[in-house]
Image (cartoon, rainbow, N blue to C red; front, side, top):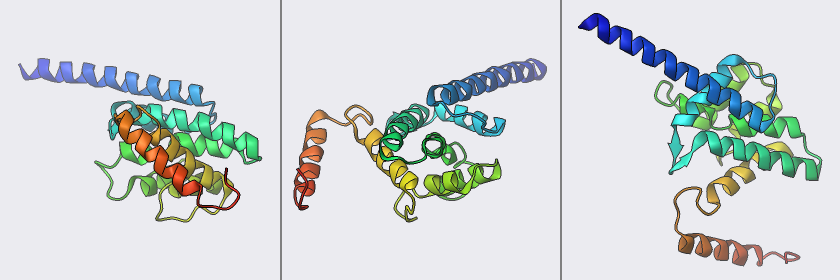
Length: 180
């Protein structure tokens, strides 16, 4: 019966929308970010159902916000900017099926559309190499994106590959004078 199908679809849609909203609200709470537009919170919640290289995008964004805040507080960068930018940096991944372009550019545009300041928008857009990171906050976002994605277990990588990668990083770091 077509009417029954529409009724079930409507009910399922409402349940999913509720789940998405709750996931977004929980993410904002866990990251300690306040004042986000409700549409950004809904888009964040959609990331609960997205993965990238086997890593849940919403969990990755929350983890980044917490790592970024720790680093920012240690070096005197703007904690509010990094927490917000980290949480929103992959927001475009919720929209890549609807909007053409790279996710970090889409994320920046969404953040700007919903009232985020330029410092947050720049840090979001510069988390990949095609845009130069010109502020300490943008550099922090780029760094914690690599840390979160590169830690053991984040992307289903084997321990052998992780150890190999860490050895290569250590060897590279040791080529610089003064690095111990």
